[in-house]
Amino acid sequence: MPQGDKSSYTNKQKRQAAHIEAGYKKKGLSTKTAEARAWATVNKLTGGGKKSGPSRKKNSGG
Image (cartoon, rainbow, N blue to C red; front, side, top):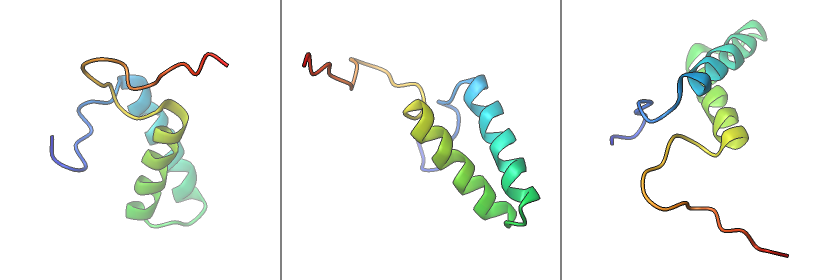
């Protein structure tokens, strides 16, 4: 998957990014910056796109 490919994200994540991007644009950021920040925010909130294979997160069991 090439860098910047958004095909592995769910529809909900795509909607979230669009909404966040609109908020950044409203604050006066450029389209490119707003998009980058929106996807960074979605990644932070949701842990990124859908992943195939075994789960990447391990429960610490603490």
